Image (cartoon, rainbow over all chains, first blue to last red):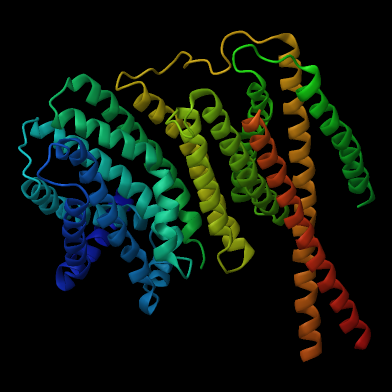
Length: 227
Length: 235
Length: 43
């Protein structure tokens, strides 16, 4: 178990180091999320009162759309120069590849969120009155679940020629419960309603995270076995 | 091969009369509901197809697990055909549910947990079929699609729960019944018709499944012998 | 009554559609098999 974690950290470190060097994926994700915010401000008038109702949804739409961009790259980029074959033949457990990729993608998406969510609040002129702690908790739980399923399906889709198109089609129906829970919980926190309702949504998200982490962890080796 | 043919024939001989009996039961024998009138008769086909849609999905999950444990061409084919039939029946369920909703609640679509779960189920089925359309050896695709089938199967109850909570306006109801769609008690004739409809549609499902799987198996055999022949001609 | 008609038409049409798809697959298979046989006899 310990070796799996250490190997996972090595792989995550490798991915993040490469990302820090090129800054391509994260740059794209940031620009894309900014563009999504702008497009939404054209679609829904940001000066009107309806903004309050759509902000919770927007937080998640940005996360998911920008996240899908990053997820697409995480395995397809390994196809170049047969890096994936190298990883596969390396003397490590396939699950550690998965965990490493989850860690790397999670840190990528959270760093994008750290910038894009404040920008979203800023551009839509939204005054944050809820509890920061709960808000962060909900966003992190939702993002973890999204990354857990997303990384797994990205590895699966990387086998196809049109993986960029395939990934959203596979991913979006599967994360729909997470999205519902995330949006509702975020709404409750942002509107400073009773926190107990948000906690039951949070529990659903945590259960989802654990269930899918376990299942993906176990099934990942079947995806990696051969190409 | 003989035996299988016999089984298919028996299925067909049961299926055809039961379809006609079903139509008779639905349109002539069963009583007309007082409040909803004739439109209530959509109910029979709606419930039957919905049952088969979820059954087909369960079968996909079952064969997916089995394929992962012991890869086998037949199991892989059964899972695929079951998913295809599932798409057809899920679409029927959605369409009949929508027309019924239009007739009784005057809207085509309501964000009701069962309806939305069925819609998500349809998308999962379609995604599953997309994976099977990938190119590569069947062993590889069998593995990938089985993995997705298992995850999709796990997801369906969670979707149902999440949407139910969502609909109950943020006050989670974990156990206990939602509002009863059939509108209170059900008359014995209606129940009998309903059960018969479920039976007939299940037989239809089994029949389609066997036919589809047979064709698919044949296709693999033909492909194999074609390759063999081409190699022979080339050498 | 009208809605009843719509629902049942859609149902049978979709089932018939799937059966037609299966039939088409079978037809194309038959064609392929015939071709294989011809090749085999030519050889």
